[in-house]
Amino acid sequence: MGYRFTAAAFNQLLESLREKYRVYAPTLLKGKGKFSDTDLVGYAEISKIEDVVFNQKSYFSPKETFYPVTQRLFYFNENGFSESVVDEKGMIVFLRACDIQAVERLDKIMLENGPSADYYYERLRNKLKMIVMDCQESFDSCFCVSMGTNKTENYSASVRLENGVYLSDVKEDIEGLFAFHGETIEVSPKFVESNKQSVKVPENLVLESVAANPIWEEYGSRCIACGRCTVVCPSCSCYTMQDIFYDDNPKCGERRRVWASCQIDGFTDMAGGHSFRRNNGERMRFKVMHKIKDFKQRFGVHMCVGCGRCDNACPEYISLAHCIDRLGKEEAENRG
Amino acid sequence: MAKNSYLPFKAKILAKYQQTELDWTYRLECQIQPIAGQFMEVSLPGVGECPISISDFGDGYIEMTIRRVGQVTGGIDKLVPGDYLFLRGPYGNGFPLESFYDKHLIIAAGGTGLAPVKSVINYFYARPELLQRCDILTGFKTPNDVLFKCDLDKWAQTFRVEVTVDKLDEFGNLEVIANSCSRRTGLITALIPDVEIPSLEDVRVIIVGPPVMMKFTAQEFLCRGLAKESIWVSFERKMSCGLGKCGHCKIDETYVCLEGPVFNFAQAQTLLD
Ligand SMILES: Cc1cc2nc3c(=O)[nH]c(=O)nc-3n(C[C@H](O)[C@H](O)[C@H](O)COP(=O)(O)OP(=O)(O)OC[C@H]3O[C@@H](n4cnc5c(N)ncnc54)[C@H](O)[C@@H]3O)c2cc1C
Ligand code: SF4
Ligand code: SF4
Ligand code: FES
Image 1 (cartoon, chains in turn blue, brown):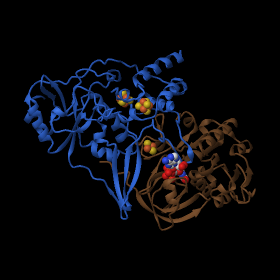
Image 2 (tube, protein in one colour; image 1 turned 180 degrees about the horizontal axis):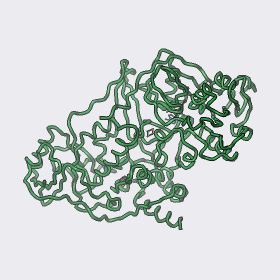
Image 3 (cartoon, rainbow over the protein chains, first blue to last red; image 1 turned 60 degrees about the horizontal axis):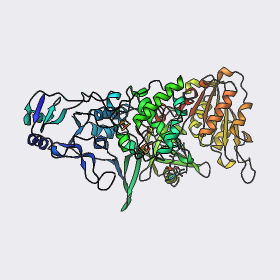
Image 4 (cartoon, rainbow over the protein chains, first blue to last red; image 1 turned 90 degrees about the vertical axis):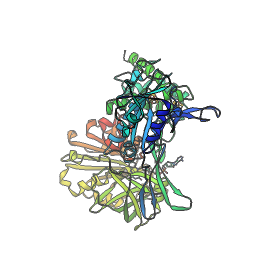
């Protein structure tokens, strides 16, 4: 079913939804940009549709809404452990088609990999309802079409701003509220069919040959191992455990998990001083192979969804898109 | 909803035995039935959690041999019998014991690498008829680093056990090593050319130790004509979950905590960190 909303009607919809849900969307975060007086687009809870930034790509990905940067797992004291509690409310998140595809990638690792689903991930994931924001045109650095992630059917509703009104295709009407506040009209969501850049993901890469390729040395000399590329990535999921105890009572504390990055020092450090991939170029190779080879080998789809956020975030102007293309060409030549 | 695999359970320390200055074996009250070569995530709330191999197990208990190297292992070092550790697991695949039945098993363990294979050795020590023969080669830094001295002595009653140390201690003393074993100085790799191999096809090898030791030891066995498929190794990687989620242990498309830590060498050799 399709619906049309004036801004006022959409805000009434949001107000009704907010009784049972927290609503998150890309918004302008003031003063959070690269320089102290600049803004950037990131996720925050919203109360009105005007807060949503439609005409830019968000710098941060939506994953932080349902897979927080820091997540408390449990508390402990002398008597034992108690599980952290979650907000009773559900979660509605505005995100793009590629982002929804990335959620499906996170599901693969967090729900399917290993002996069981990740309890803490599943707990929030089950609350998540997705509202896909139409992409009327591609942003710079996007290469979703090349990755086949420019479209999705996996959403509760779509939304786009067109001539001052909001148009929504609804697949799962949340509490019947879209029908209640909207005016019925024919709507189909718009997805981009081409990007400004295209990338050709090489198939049949041979790992030994890839690892021996000198491009990693070059990337190693540029990459500063800051990890920004993995922080902004919607499909990166690694974390590290962290215990803290409270100052007023060292017997009480909590165990948390925090996002980790394969690009940053310490990711593989073991006791006795062993570590792997000390060179930043090797880390880049590891990340790129995960994004366009290893993950697919395990789960059947590429991990990278071509959102281009890593390219935007890198302070050294390293572009994954270029890297993939270059690697493909050089490896094809190497094979002759 | 999945069950919460991150919540550890409480396990009482029943006994604590000193192995070396840094290593102690802890016997913990625990009902799990692990496979030899599997590991547990061991917690000290407020300090952290780390993966530790199960070095032995029996009715109602498991043993772990833990080296004091950092935060968690340093905290554990201070505990005494009657105190509690917190555990989750067992994790990982463990050794495929049945593939060693009726074979000539050679175990090469370097340093703390002896811990994860101790229960393999004990399994066959209790059932020697399951093997054609068994050679146990162990290498340590100095005589003071030798683990499981009593067990080495015990095993030497049934199997051939060789102990080598990289260098002697300050007293030039080899006597502290288990008595009934053959004792030498030098690297573990130097023991391999002398292992008697009556039938090459029947040999199966387990190698566990630091990455460099495993690499060169495997090479020595390949030089003796062994097929890669006849060799097994056990990997150590940084691990935060043991559940295939945290990503730290990943190599290529392989998760060491899930598909490992035990790998057939034919596969292990292709894994590129
Ligand atoms: C499958 C598997 C099985 C294992 N089995 C055993 C076993 O049976 N027995 C055993 O003893 N160990 C075993 N280990 C190794 C064990 O997990 C590690 O020794 C343990 O994680 C160390 O934890 P820790 O908190 O004590 O050390 P940490 O405090 O984490 O320190 C680890 C190392 O990092 C260094 N370090 C710590 N913090 C810093 C810092 N800020 N900057 C620089 N360096 C730092 C320390 O010096 C130390 O060398 C196993 C590991 C794996 C993966
Ligand atoms: S383009 Fe970069 S940020 Fe986006 S999914 Fe691919 S690797 Fe992640
Ligand atoms: S953002 Fe750029 S510099 Fe930072 S770790 Fe990633 S590739 Fe390296
Ligand atoms: S230890 Fe976390 S994925 Fe293997």
